[in-house]
Image (cartoon, rainbow over all chains, first blue to last red; front, side, top):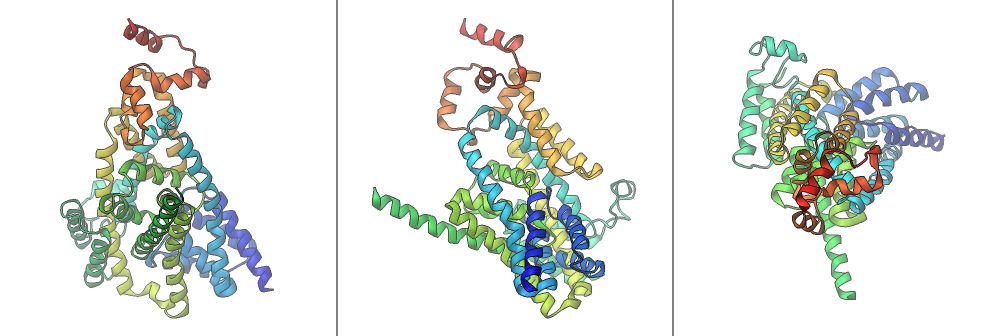
Length: 192
Length: 246
């Protein structure tokens, strides 16, 4: 019985690790589909996960794997799920790395990476808006934010962000210390 | 020789342990998703210890985003592999997984009610506000490092808009930008070649030597000979080389 459950978890999460492109917020919906297909847990239980994965450290997809695995088959289930979702990464990334080392200096690879680098800057910048949501900005809509910038900004969030930015850019304080200080200020002044 | 190999093994072992510490720290103190760890890793790996250059790190982020699986795990495996071999890859990924694992288990065992607690809510709000600023600062630093031509600025801005406004999957954005990088020398000729190849940190000394030796169409030479994209050496590019030879 337990072995059957563990095999189900392994199959589910190995598949997720192998076929989900684009990070945690792509994996969670796929995970939900799998969970429904296998009847591993109720939709209510799964929605708890979304809230929980936000306040716990680490990648969301790993929080999800641990959560689903534990709820379905206990601590062993959590271990199997986490292992299974990471296993494809080991295989694929190590192959790609070997390829990269071998062809790093070839013209096509350099040209390709030359195009990719600025795009990566753009996608890192896009994450600024994502983290600003519900902390610095109170609306998810970019249009609304541009139209009413003051009404849709959280003052305390904005102050934390400005101080955090200066602390890193100018004083090179460790980002870990900065975000923990931000969290402490949030605990004091941002309880919703 | 044997002794050298041994010291190398020992130093790789120690480096793997260092990877474990760095990624454990990163995994423990980043909240709200894997992208929050980009400023932390950039600080730890590039700024503080100088294990990686900014460009290498950026490449690892891009590659990790475009491969399947958990992006944070992909970045850990890639950086760990680069700095301390397979051992390092394993240690980095393990360290990244431990905090996510332990925190969920502890919460499920002891305080499931924390997710609706106002203090937890406030903590997350503050951390996210700080993270937004940290990511912004890192993005600006990366921009300065990478964007040295108008077309690169355009690629960065278009990528940003595609992701933010149309929610395009990052994999398509990265592959599209890479394809553009490959095609640009064919579309615009010499100018774009120079802007691509000034990424000196990633070019081997041998290649640099070739580059400074002759100003011939180096990056295209390989492409020509293999006949990529059905390109035939007619038109502008070969004409320029002939001029230089004169």
